[in-house]
Length: 415
Image 1 (tube, rainbow, N blue to C red):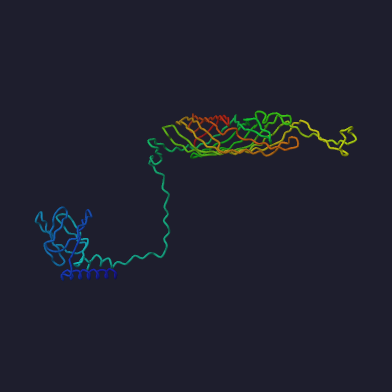
Image 2 (cartoon, rainbow, N blue to C red):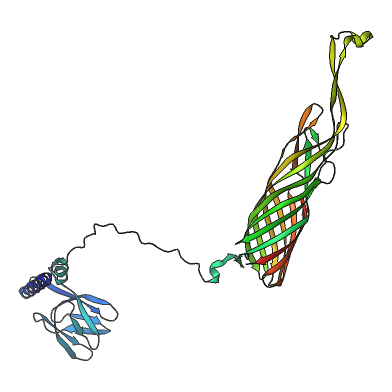
């Protein structure tokens, strides 16, 4: 209540000062008019008889200058409008157009503002004070994905492609055929090029938002033939009775390029470990015996000490266990066709890194030799397909050729 009284007193005092300055001729009175509809402002207009201005497409003339009042004359219709009280924010009627007195100033000959009711009124308002308490930062939720389909499309010149997301699915699969070609070495002995390890695999595969993961068991791993060519000291070297486990994971970036046709590019990594039995015929020590010098006659006895140890060697079958671990990183590219009930695709896999490690060694003669292997070549072509005879259930097949030769059949479900 006290603040309102103070403001009213200041406003009355400012108006009185303004009227006194106007009456004394201490300066020129200027004012501005603002449309209440469009917000357009006209001014400055000098408040004196005969002063003219344009408003709403007409010329208006101020007829008289009475203290605290103003009168307007319409040149087109020769009608008078007013008088109106000349105060700030007063609405005046100019032939059906409402205009407000939005600004009043008293200026001297140099244009300096001597008095302005608007400034006096604003000076009475208290200045805002920043709060002492630190306000907590406002939490902004993450924006939701756009519903405009164009936001999820990629423009490549005149070709428009759309990002594709694979359906979430799970597959139980079996591979009766899975073989990988390796180049073998046993110590310094180079093996035959492209000898394969054949095995069977049983596993599970899951895919979610273009990520995929496989876990599988290895059954009946063995080499198809001899790992190294037969020699007098080493022959019939082969691996068999293999068993173990492995995993395969990766991601495919997929684009819809034309209706049901899709382009895919991605990467994959695999790791597997298997226990194998190594069988071979090797030249090895079979025993030792001691020869005394008196048992040697003639010149052969010259230079001999009292006795000498002699080793006997023989060809013998050897069987021992070795552990094989392999890590492979690959790049994937391909195209596929999908419809509501079936799909098919062709993919190219290129191994960019591979490492095969064996734990265990083979003794040949007096030396222990470690088994080593490298993939014969890094390229593999894969053909795949699926068919869904029932709602959400499907049958899948896959065949590969190259560094890996596989045939897979599986039963899956879309989620």
